[in-house]
Image (tube, rainbow, N blue to C red):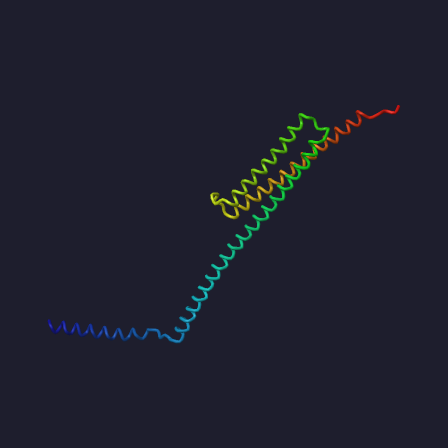
Length: 193
């Protein structure tokens, strides 16, 4: 029995060694120079990708900076336009209201109504200016620059509407004055017949 086990082990060892040598013939051969150049190109690609990612991040940061500057410019233009509209509004009210109220063709009971209508527009304008001051100076209103610019543009449109409303009221009261003046001339004309 011992001899059978030895023969079996010996046969097994021979078969293992012979099969190992036979399978070694199918092992591919690598050229180290190609592998090294492939590794170098991979490393170079990684460096380029890293540089590309840095460039993308830089461009993204610059885009955000440009958007911030653009929003700041929009805000400045809107504030400038608001200031000009409010100055024009105050000038119109000051000059035109005085002219209208000093007209002899405006009746005493109309003076308060005319003054109140002009004052309502001026008060609305002052409220808008206070709100804009809060937007621009206070950090309590959590707004992005784009949201702030949009609010300022809306207030700018409102101020243009107020100027147009004042101009329309002034034109209407001037037409009333002109009509009453013509009516007075017609009623008090002297007849020569």
